[in-house]
Amino acid sequence: MRSKVLNRVLTIGFAIIGVLLMSDARAQTEAEAAAASQRELTKAEISRLETDCRLPSEGEVMNQFGNAIPATRVSIPEQRILLLIRIDATDPEKITPFPDLPSGGIGRRDFCERVFFGNVAVIPNVTAMGLRLRPGLDLEKDYPRAYAQIQEHQQVSVIPASDFARVDIADSGQAPLFVTALADQPMIATGQRYFLIDKSVYVPLRE
Image 1 (cartoon, rainbow, N blue to C red):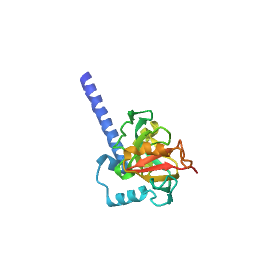
Image 2: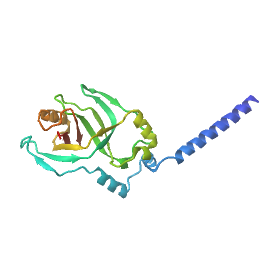
Image 3: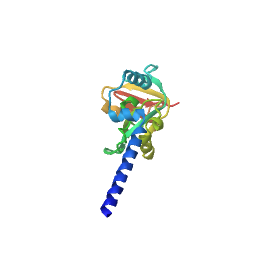
Image 4: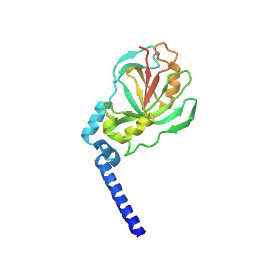
């Protein structure tokens, strides 16, 4: 008798779990489904990504750093970075990764590229690495499951809109040393964040 009751409870329990899983699948957003499937991007998604992620490339040529350091003054709108790892500024070997996001995380169609950033200071540093999110992305609407975890871990860092000196460098690994060499320049916003994309370093300027 007890075994029959137990079997019935287990049957009902598994049925409920199945309904919940089906309900969760039905509630999956289009963006979450694309991220979980890891499918190839459509032409429309590629076009939107290229348009939304494009940073200003033209601006005032800056000569303040000397002819050896060609720089361009560019106005960058607010950028959001999804943090993947934190790096101890005093001990670069100390790296703290963030937990993996649920439901496939943020899909390739909604982030621009990998970004490193740190603080403009007299000591070279890189404090984090993450993904630059596509401007216009509504995290809460498109990725509700990941959004809850992102909020819990404060995993999005905002780089405020500002003017930056963009300098192309030969070795991206030298970016922290390069930024430190400019830290004493009067037009550089010391204490603010610089960021590095590929081999272009963006150094914040004073207003």
